[in-house]
Image (cartoon, rainbow, N blue to C red; front, side, top):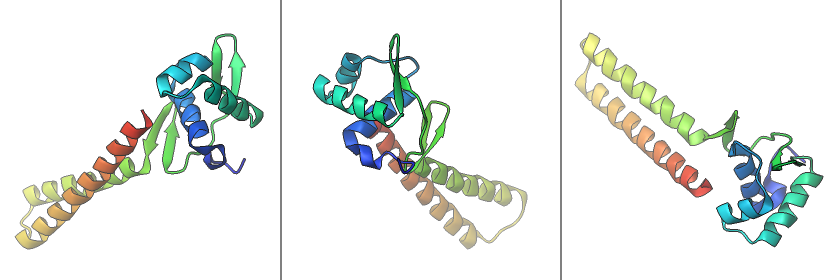
Length: 138
């Protein structure tokens, strides 16, 4: 595997991400019910994931055997954080810094307004996209 989920297809990637973010082992029927995917499709994709060494079966169900990079995401523990969320934090940091700078010293109002508008727009757009992607994963 080339360090990504792209060759698994959309369903395989959804199953892998679901198992990655789950706190306990999950059975095929439970995965099927939660993701709205037919049991046979889940079973087929679980077998592909097992063959690639990404998941393994234990006594209670399937669990992640190996964490692989997921394009566009940072994996921290069992949480997936999209890169757009990180970008939004950058812009909110600029906004907060600019507001603090304005409170401490005299600054040119034109520069202040441009920086605030651009950083607020950047934060809003990246945060909105991150939320859309997060909802799509659920």
